[in-house]
Image (cartoon, rainbow, N blue to C red; front, side, top):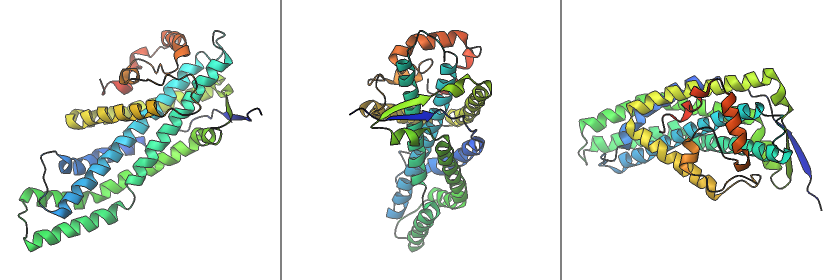
Length: 306
């Protein structure tokens, strides 16, 4: 019995207008959370230890949101690279469809990471208010000696709860953006069938311009995140590790639609020039790179991982 063919149109992207707010709220949230995550910080009470664990969870969610943004950038980069050779006769339709399924899988991964980040922030105010209240009770009892530094951290955390809620709101908008792209949802419904992607939109200048604007928006977000990295080298190192883990997990669990993708994708592949994920398309990318007028900007997204 032959598989049912499912056709998915490659949509015109919508612009994520919230990215600047996401970057700003990420900065504010890290100011509040990072002091609690230091390796040398040993909370003297159970309640304070729980706050440290919760802070580490929120920072982990922030990393997921940054990785999701990288995947948003990658989709724009992939679409623009494809559009430059959309009618190149050197590549078969099978090659094109395999390549485009890779784009769809990047969308799936981006939406998954944004969803996980959002789930980590659920009930944020309720959790923190309860933990802060318990910590204040312990301090009032005087059963454990609490330094002025810890008291100051508690005050900053209490005042910074609204900043964390702002970040949570931006992450929620992020999920809505991924859903609006409609790539991941349609591909998942066709995971056991033959997925065919209609890429005719990438022949339209107006649509290509939208992809250019999308890439630009993510580059601007990247520059803002880079400023955070420069101020916190430890967080920069943690982001590198988080990216390695993301790619290792992906390599071990490739999506069913990715026939033709290399399963042993390395960290160097991820930070290397131009996404060279689909082996038969190596020549495709080389030609695309030669034609790119903004080649000097090609690796801007990855400059803070190098």
